[in-house]
Image 1: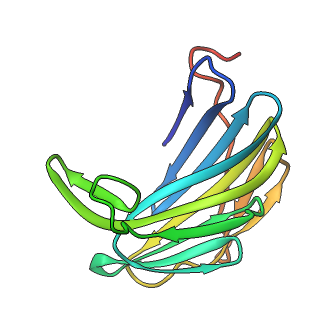
Image 2: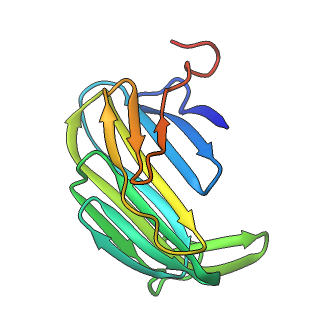
Length: 168
């Protein structure tokens, strides 16, 4: 299953996100940051309260219920920050709402990239497993047609969709 969205649709800068979802707990996010000039980009992910370990360009997390998560950035992030809810009253960073009217403390992952001239493309892989922490994957292919390779021989090609509304 694939999906593509753009936000804001007509602003500058804007982000076009292509999501590739595959069975077996694989989610690839291909972000195209469009516009002009130099910009710092920060990707944010909110997780339930969990044990999180940052290692190089990725994160491993032991989530509630025995689920293991690996987040991998293939684009040399400047830093990966882990934030809790802190002492501010909810809502805010590190809080999540699993359903309407319910707030729980969680973990905010912020993947920060150095200031770069736009446009830029970023590729992030999330893998989840109930059995053990998924192994790291490798990246092959070109910037326009990246292919993620897994240690067991599987591959995942991430091809961006045309822009919403037929392209620009």
